[in-house]
Length: 262
Image (cartoon, rainbow, N blue to C red; front, side):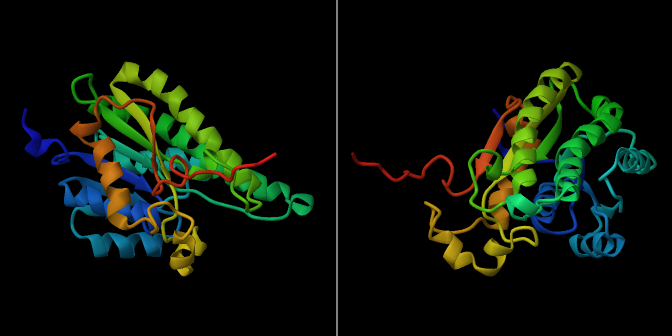
């Protein structure tokens, strides 16, 4: 057993959507550190190019809007101009919407469900050929969906479509895994808890307060997210299929609820 290479990604090609900031950037940074060539995509071309320049020569910007099926196909076509095969796809691009129940709008439902559920499916579909070219039973290609603990537990915020979308993506991960393993492609997901990002402003701006509710007594750090993604993407995770790894400091699985007497 050669444990020295279990977590290495040398020679592998990855695509991370929403890779210009937040969790996507954390994952891209980790992949590059383990030897991968990483393409990052985001809707804002300037942010995408800036992050690629920051992360160095092994990071390439592919700006795209994957909120539509056409956008997913366009990104797959862009990648095909550079690479004949794709070892790792991280479906990280996402959106959230919070509004009271009585006024929650259709656009807040459609925007979130389209980007958080429909896009991971159709981008993976568009990249199916590239993933098949890279994958085999001995060395599977990887699709990693970024879900959320909000798909595993109730959140007090009125983010109805977001919570529904992440629960849907967790189940979709399993269904896609059942189909794509036939082609040498493993599908898994990571459900992050509190990580500082533009989407999670509470963790970003009030980390110490948020940490008080977390069993680990801190919010997530970039290394926590990168490590989970590296595990799933590398040889270390080759026998993990359809699983959702919760990375949240124990909030979902190590929190004791209040008891009710009487």
